[in-house]
Image (cartoon, rainbow, N blue to C red; front, side, top):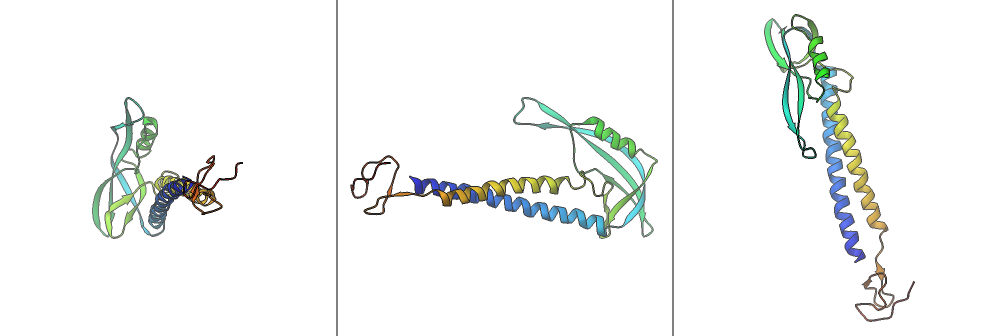
Length: 193
């Protein structure tokens, strides 16, 4: 029975550790992508042509009702190498806090000008909230945190599986369960205690 327990611990630990390492890899890739945007995408001044708060319903399986989620949608007009672009953008996340998104839309009101970053390979690919802030690095932080937790649990279970020792019959070496009086393999009396 103890060997079955070890197998289960190893299996569950391996799954958790594997998922954790995948999450850490995705977090690393995502964080590196955000860092690359900050370091290599050029800035351009853009005019806000439209800004609004939009909403959608998000179903939470733990709650009995849907949650309204809000997101800012902002459209920018800008010029790259003499060519005009009009591109809509979002902050990349939504929230149940309407006031948070309303503040963002108010800060990016139509007619205001802001510095944005654009992808030199595709000037329609823009980021208006690029910076060393929580919102811009939210996804890598979230995935990294989950990866650390999953990996920690997984490797903890793998270590625990090595600690679990099977009880063995002193005569034949076969597996026995705690509390048995005789070995199920060879019928040798087992020491008590």
